[in-house]
Structures are given as structure tokens and as C-alpha cells.
Amino acid sequence: MKEKPLLTILIVDDEPRNRRLLDAFLSADGYTAIHANNGQEALMLSIDMQPSALLLDLMMPDMDGFQVLQKLKDNPATQAIPVIIVSALDDLAARQRVLASGADDFLGKPVDRWELSLRLHRLLHKGEVNASTGDTHDQ
Image (cartoon, rainbow, N blue to C red; front, side, top):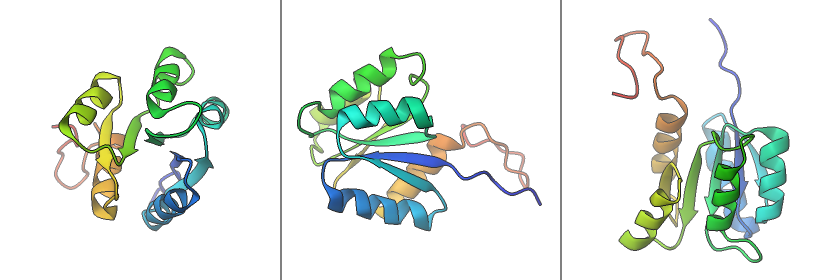
């Protein structure tokens, strides 16, 4: 049986406690996590490491998540990396702004481990065929 390659997820959050929690959730699901504690570091790691996806906080000092997202989407080297916004701003207006800004998904804080797992799996495995049923994940 062919082993799946480890997928790397970049966690971008200025709060160490939030990064550790998300890291624990990701590790339990078999992902490798790398961390950035600010927007500038996130942009640099995104270019250098080409992660499979980003979990991006909105409210950070110096460069907020919207600015990071815009720079990621404007750069050909990073524009295809899927981004899930993770934020305590969990109202309809925030969700609409996030999705209109080019994010692939939104998770409110506190993050539910099951929901994170499901959303990441759907985002990273769209179009894969289920060997037992022949169904694709993006139907």
C-alpha cells in the first residue's frame, strides 16, 4: 500500500497558545505543522516552504490577516495555496468579507477539532476518487 505524503499546514497566529492548540489538532490528524507568529513571517514561510494550506488568524499586530491574504493571492508563488481564516470575529459580515477577499474557508474561534479536520480534508482532497465507491470528494 502506498503511503500518503505528509501534508504541511502553516499556522499563522500571534498567540502561542492558539498555535499550540492548532498544532495538536493537526498532528493528531497526521499533518505536519509549521508556525508563523506574524504576517511577515507567514509570507516568507509561504514562499520558502510552499505549505499545503494556511490557517490564518485575522487579528494580528502590524499586518492583519486580510493584508496577509491579499499579499498571498497577489503573489504567483503563493496564490494557489488554500487559506482557511481562523478568527474570533465570527459574524456574518466577517465571514462574507473573508470569503470575498479570497479565503477558501472560515473557522470561528474557539476552533472545534472535528470541524477543522473535516474542512481541511475537504479542502486538500477535493477531486480525489474514493477507491471503494468511485465517488469524488468535490461532488
